Image (tube, helix red, strand yellow):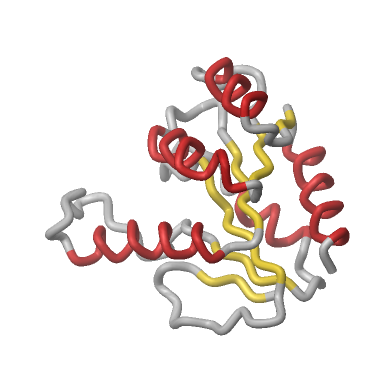
Length: 156
């Protein structure tokens, strides 16, 4: 398994199934669920795109003209487009507005698995989108990871 983050140099994922880890990141608020998912698949031939940037600086202006911010957003969009699977987790202690936007952008892609535990502030919206677009939806991380594992095994 290889994990690529926005800080990393490009790694060729040819021949791998790839997974983008979309969802709650809010530094200091959201749990580091991305590491849990990556650890689960550590012995697999799999490419993982993890947008949780090690060098994130909350002082960066979230404007297109800020080079680091622009790189982050474009890296995420490019990785979402190229990934074979999108695994999305909504941490109930966060608002995750960008994740909600990404859910809308990729709902019709057929690539998504979503985990949205009870307590997430817009869970009803997430449920409706998942129902409408036939996206598998789970209440807990373990079940969602199991579904991702099943999906990856099916396309090997």
